[in-house]
Amino acid sequence: MRNRKVIFGYILILVGILLPLYAFLGLSRGIVLDKSKYDRFMKSDVNQNLEEEVAAYNESLGDKSVIVDPFVTEDYVSDYSFMEDPDAVFCYLKIPKLDLTQPVYLDASNKHMAMGVGHIEGTDLPSRKKGIRTAIAGHRGYYDAIMFLHLDELVEGDRVFLEWQDKSLEYKVYGKEIIDPWDWQKLNPVEDKNILTLLTCDPLLPPRPKRLLVNAELVEEDKEALVVDSEPEEKVSVKVKRVNNIILATTGVLALAFCISLFKFIIYLKKGKSLK
Image (tube, rainbow, N blue to C red):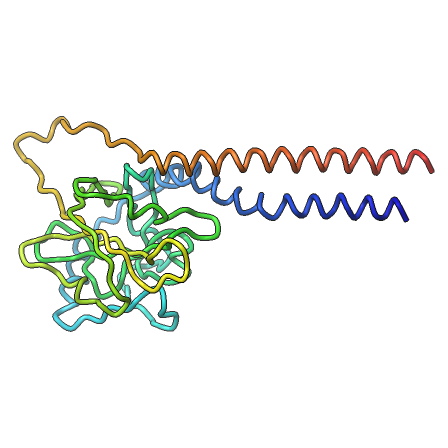
């Protein structure tokens, strides 16, 4: 009877360590591997027809485009018919201050927002044309990814990038606001401006009835002097660094504790067999 109790105790310990370890491994994997996925995307083939497809999509929106809240709408069927593979990565979102590198998918569905971030249908796809607004939605953290957890850390002047294999669009944050889920006029285009809006749930802790918008405007290219970027490299937020380090350290501690407990369990089982 004693042996069974000890074995059951070891199993409980291993399961108790394994459950949080699984969650933290997912978070750590995202921190470490997101950049390698980005590197693979940047080395993949270029879609030569992308600009024409983007222009055609934006032209089709008209003045009566329908925008739906991606966090409460599950049955809405999107139409990105120009994409051969609806689950293919459209581009990458990079935010240096947040140490964030996330794939952007067309359609902010539950499936896509579990894989990265998603373009909200009914808003423009990104281009250099003025008078458009691109909206991208992401979770405020997910089961195994940080995603837009630190989006509220962005302030005026912070840089945001959308990147493809052959080009990059740079935006600068100019403001943020909290809206209701039905307040979609806030995502309307602004004449003579090219805006990127990042959207997530608010506040940080559930329930999250509001939506946080971070608005950034496209940086115009200086065609006369684009050889050297004179701006200093943006530093990662101290808060973001701290959270990332805590996640990685906790993963390491849990992994070590699991290995030690498993080793002791195996030794106990071997001793039990040798006494028979």
